[in-house]
Length: 317
Image (tube, rainbow, N blue to C red; front, side, top):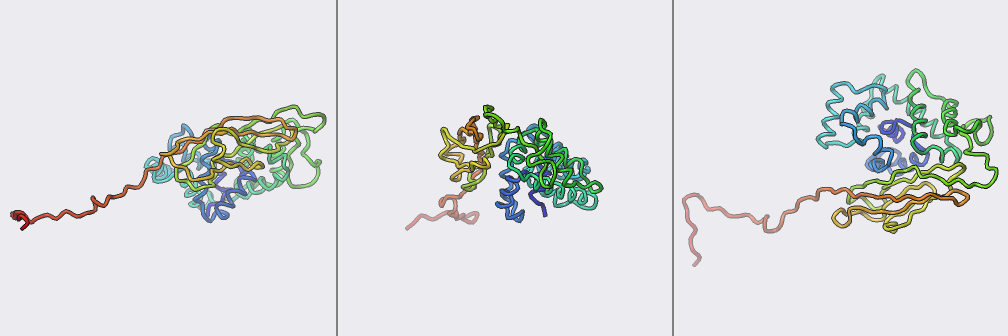
């Protein structure tokens, strides 16, 4: 059965971040019900990865992330057809490919998932969690996973070395050089006043289908800072229609959206560091139209009596 960690590898080619892993394990009952995984499609990383790709390129990118190879011709044709016929979406195809892994492919992805679990677990300091955001951090995660296969399984030491790359200007991780569990470095020494603003790294657009349930995740704010992130806030035009987790940046919609009533929302997301420095950007959430089911009127449901051929209706008496 597909796991959240496996889906992160399939879609993004990297280990999950601790916050995302905890969130999706919660809403999917640890992968037992993957219907909520569609929330991933609203992330900027998801849209950046797949926008502009052909259906064949999307399928091959999933195969490469999972198995380090392109799809075989039969599989490529099958999954490409599902995408182009809208019989499945990228998420469900990734899950099908993951669930269908056998033999060498299964051994490869099992090794990658095990290594990804180590990497995520070793992000055990807040500075490391904060640093594992944005394009550079995602590439660090992909580089780590790309080195793993059935014959070369990832280790905790290798995960720590990868995490240390999240802090390119530092020589040693927070908490000293010895010891296990997490190996990233502190963003700076902490000496002197912090005058550097944090920087939002999440996108400025996202989308959600109309009729989605209230409290559905629609956007996740991410940011980097030279020391540590304090909190996230939202404000602005439609902020009252959303709620944000000030610690994780996860934004949920308060009520089920309706395209015909309102087709987009805007709000400002702001990140603060511990010194009160901040960065703000406007975010637009688009509501996608979902075809409404056709209903029959009572008139259209009334049967029309037809006379047998050759007979004429008689006038009422």
